Length: 73
Image 1 (cartoon, helix red, strand yellow):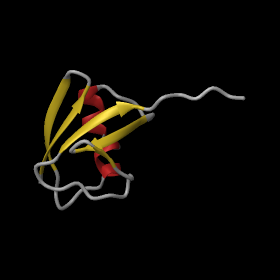
Image 2 (cartoon, one colour):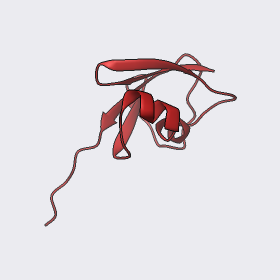
Image 3 (cartoon, rainbow, N blue to C red):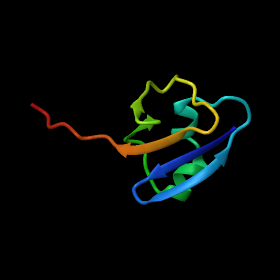
Image 4 (cartoon, rainbow, N blue to C red):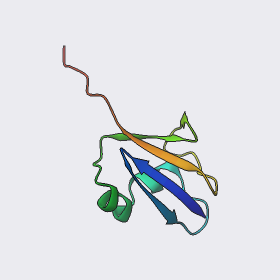
């Protein structure tokens, strides 16, 4: 499975064995280290926000975005 992952202006292609989930992509240490994002992120798969348990198909483009922080009330 070959997936393109983008964060800001940086992108990378990553090979996964089997079908990864959104969580697998977001929590991959090599992806986080190369693209430089932390834990407070969400993913858009082919432009659609998906749950972390959703599978990511071969050839998909995963765009990683920082989640907005909310103020405490």
